[in-house]
Length: 146
Image (cartoon, rainbow, N blue to C red; front, side):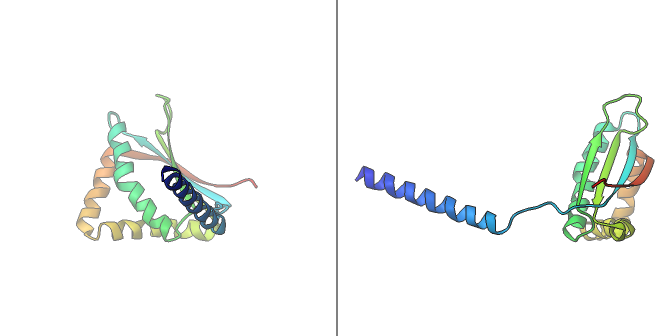
């Protein structure tokens, strides 16, 4: 009886793994190529580094996720400099399919913010709060070498 139970469990596990493999093979996740990147540099205000990191995780990343889900960009990555004398503390790189996405990126992020926080007064307060945490340190658009 024990051997039959063990054999049945093994067969079940094999079937589940085979089904999982077929599903994953049927829908491979290949990253969409980007042709340009929009890079935003920010400098956290003195003593505000951790608070700005928290702001990015709790406020900016959900907005980014909503915008990405709606096709605003391919991906975004935030880098944090560890150099004390760096002209920026945070570099956020948005990978974009083309210049069309670049032209609509700002509006798409604003729209995502409005979807997540429909109250305009609260959005304004959130923007004012962000201004207490960091200053813009530059931005640029670069081509991605293929």
